[in-house]
Amino acid sequence: MANSVWAAKGPLGNRNFRLILGGAAIGHLLMPLQFVTQILWVQAHAPEDVWLILVALIGASRGVGALTFGLYGGALADRFDRRKLLITTQALLVLMTIGITGLMLGSDGGTVGFVFFFLLTFLSAGLQSIDMPTRLAIVPDILGPDLTPAGMSLNQVAGQLAMPIALIGMGFIIDSLGFGGAYGLSLIGQFVVILFLARMSERMPFAEPRKQRGVYGFGEAIKDVRDGLAYARGHKVVLWVIVLLVTMMGLGMPAVGNLGPAWITTVIGVEIRDLGWVMMTWGLGSLVAALLMTRFASIPRRGLVIGGGALLFALSYVVFTIDNTVANVVIGNFGLGAGMTTAMVSSTILIQQLVPNEVRGRIMGILQLNMGFAQLMTMPVAILGQWLTLPVLFPGLALVTLGAILLVLATRRQILRA
Image 1 (cartoon, one colour):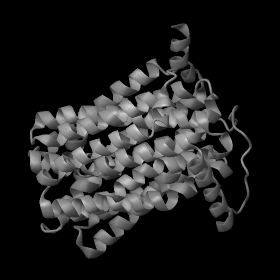
Image 2 (cartoon, rainbow, N blue to C red):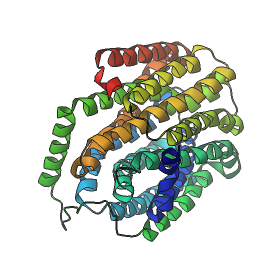
Image 3 (cartoon, rainbow, N blue to C red):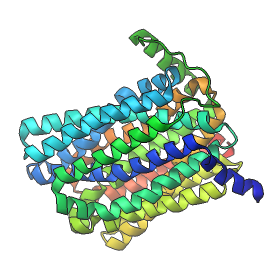
């Protein structure tokens, strides 16, 4: 019992970890506000006959950005000082936020407005795909192998404590400040994240020296990316855990995540000001899962936890879409949040324990590609939804997701044995 308590609380004694943890919490606070504001802004200004496709284009822009820069971001995290790289990406994200805020305040859509909006969304996603693997890779640098599982779980706890708060207030903020004002509010949080990173000590006790150079050429980047892909392809557990997450996220997230607000406001009929109360149950489910993983941070059969999380996600997807009621959305959201957090965090912990430090950033970059793929899949799902209607498409897609996850787990037992 004492060892379990130490595993959960030990990371908080590290100042650098507390600062990176605070930044993660703020990021989770900002993410739903930015994403939902974008969806509602496009929904409000898009022509009636293509509004769903333009909403999906937000996800597609994010997905292309993540897939374009994700592997490169992982390579950068293995090559350069991870703390300085995080500060740089956050500073550039501030510029993207200023640009999108200006568009929301000064444009009512139109062709030119939408082109610039989606371009800035693409660039923001590219920067976030550099930030995320770097942020994941730096935790073992700070804590070392023994405390990393507890640190990753605490990282998720901090984020999920922030997310329900953000979701509750999100509808009121957008309703009070408008789209541009709500999106611009996130600049405050981004500046605080930069301040936290700047206050971190440059000394990372468990870090290995990075191969730092003034110029990182295209040829070097391609070689680093190829080496990372070769490592992932050659390690069967790593490969199939990534395949499982790509399956779960690619089939599930377009409907329940990217098009979820559209489903809740149009099919279910929830008002924008009440949207946060319905969506917050996703954050509550994630919080419960994160707390349990922190309490049992030293669990040995991480693969069983990953498989259980993926199945919970798929079953909750069925509940979310099987009937057009608020109760189904609330219960489904809770399970979706718990399942996604369980599968994603456990996969990150397992892979960090399996791969050496010199390729950790690249493997984290590959792992995060599942998010980019999920965003990209939003477009074909939206096109089908515009044709078939969402109430027809989503329940069938939920059953396909459940079947695909069961197939992967049944045929690739190495995941459950990991």
